Amino acid sequence: GPSSIYARPLSDIAVSFEFFPARNPKAAADLQTTVARLVPAGPSFMSVTYGAGGTTRDCSLATVEALLRGFSVPVAAHLTCAGASRAEVDAQARRFYESGVRHIVALRGDGAEPGAPFTPHPDGYRNAAELVAGLTRLAPFEISVAAYPEVHPDALSAEADLDNLKRKLDAGATRALTQFFFTADAFLRFRDRAAAAGITAPIVPGILPVTNFAQTCKFAQACGAEVPGWMAELFAGLDQMPETRQLVAATLAAELCSQLYAGGVREFHFYTLNRADMTAALCHLLGRRAGPVLEQAS
Ligand code: FAD
Image (spheres, protein in one colour):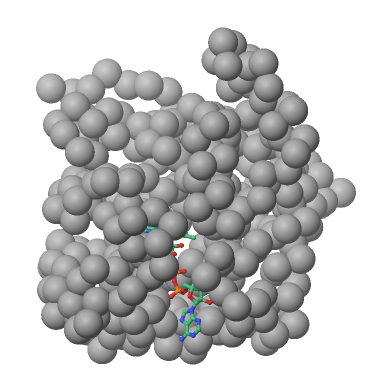
């Protein structure tokens, strides 16, 4: 029946891909190759992160512009308000708009010190909801925001976190992309709680295929996602077997997508980590075919 991921109407699934900015010319060329392989899968949009993991704001703009030039897929630029005045954030949003960006993923961002409490810039937007409101006054952007199936670590409660998501949507955002999670139940319960709270905007699961387990644990700890105990068990002993580990990771991610599909999910946002293979395989299983590796035209 339609609840099986492999026997279902064609093209009932929408996908989007997230990339981080290229820091140097080699990374930029590699990213073009990755994106060229993934574009045939027909993403609704591709997004480029902003200022996270030590990349600069100029890197983000350059990467966004390269994707807009190279491919005819809408590009969503992530934009954060951490550590910047409203004027600086607005100027960056205008630069994105002038480059052809019509979709912003509006985020608060985090403090400079990992784990330190977030302090807004004295002249800055204090949170993502304020940023969304600011963006709607600047230009006719489509706006997506972040959501946390397992609750953001700064939230006072799960309910307060959901109220915050509502504020962001009321301010003008039309879609939520979620933090990663590793059990379908975590997402499906959250989706149901959001619906019960009157949220009607699409909530799109963010899928992070685990290629590096230790690194995933670090990310997860920082953002409040739970890494189930069985996952540590599953990846134990695979450090010296990268190919086997990759197959295990792909199987897990495919099962997650399959369970989400069975739960009614039809849109998937992939954290590609700028690699094509895993996301291409998952898209393939979802009936969206990526392309082969092509020689770079010189
Ligand atoms: P907000 O929605 O502002 O919320 C943060 C926390 O504060 C929540 O717990 C919320 O409940 C609470 N809060 C907010 N306002 C109030 C209020 N008025 N009263 C009480 N509580 C309040 N980071 C980057 O640096 N660059 C990126 O490109 C990036 N991309 C991301 C993409 C996705 C899909 C996701 C899920 C996260 C991304 N992040 C990125 C990480 C993000 O910046 C952090 O998770 C950050 O800590 C929170 O951002 P936010 O937009 O969710 O904040």
